[in-house]
Amino acid sequence: MRRETQRSQSSPPVIAMRAPGTGPFVVVGMVLCLLVSMSLLRNVLWSDPITLWEDVVRKSPNAARAYNNLGLAYKAVNRHHDAIAMFSRALERDPFYVYAYNNRGVEQGKSGQTDRALEDFASAITLRPDYVDAYNNRGVEQGKLGLIDRALEDFTQAITLDPSNVNAYYNRGKVFAETMQPERALEDFTMAITLNPAHADAYHGRGLAFEKMGQLDRATEDYKRSEQLLSLKR
Image 1: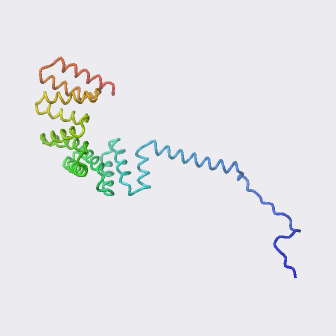
Image 2: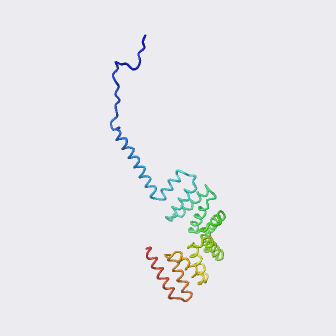
Image 3: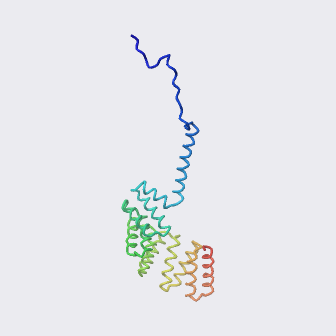
């Protein structure tokens, strides 16, 4: 007996039917639409640092750097409480993340938590003894507490580590001015101006120093220059 096979010469050919709307052009169009949508979504995320880093944190919840950068994004829009929380989360994931200590210290200082700020700057300096910004920032907080000698030590150390640090010269100049040392204040404000000729506050500070030294004409010149620079920023 001959068995019948599934293919029979007498069987009519089977013609595959294509569903409507599934031609190659339609498929390509669908893929392009998907790619465009993904690109638009990516552009929305990247256009806003907060949205971007919130998305990164969701996708990488153990990345200390992502939390630190989200904290910086919050800091930029004065969301100080949220910024501190993100820097803290960064440190929970990496207790040796020196930048997070410094960043949290800055925000705590702005929020009036001077003691905590000092602790964070000390931690940053312990982890990285040549961290210029931490010395400068700690000097600012020391000055708030009236610890003048310690503040001057920190600013001087920052300048020793980085002789081109404008903020350290300016901050030390302010301390000298407040402690009735106009000559030394004058030197630091002048150095700050040399490094950054657009530093309006340094011109104003130097004007005060000139005034205390009785050089009223030069004081007036610096006050005017300070106002001119400030008006450009308005």
